[in-house]
Length: 254
Image (cartoon, rainbow, N blue to C red):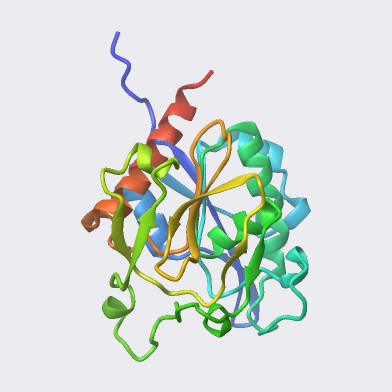
């Protein structure tokens, strides 16, 4: 009998709390849900920002993977003892309360996890690391922010090199050790806990890719935006294909 899949993988997508015309919404960028549809052949499902009201055990029982997206908001610094907030207007405590425990629990039970930009920073914090609130103000670091005066195409274009860790997980499915990525972030990784290993670094030494040591499946995060035109970029597509393969493998488990 053929072992053909009977359904596409169901992939949860982290929601952001947004207020629109005076009402709260749980939102996710279309570029992320489109990347799941196109690069993973999957079905995206936006996860509400309900914090501990979310039945995480039930959610993890039903999804085949989780994608934690980028956002205009930042993780509140009290989660990593980061002092006062550099911009208290750019926070989403409802998302923090939902994603930080969800990342840890998903990895623990073997759900494939892929974290992007803010999601990358969430993984750093969820596993006990710390963040720079303003990378461009740190001596020796590049300015990793995008130029808002450029067109959308120009802002998401590759702008700096990354080196891939030859001893990391990425090297198991990538056939190159250096490539270029886009850069649209003001915050960044200051330190990693022992639970994470670096997978990619920028020319200034800033860690821009990590994976969870000893994870049961795909559990990775990147600081750049691989969802952008994912089908046209070999690195971005390779990341999503590896994540998709892990979701399909999880789907096949009894």
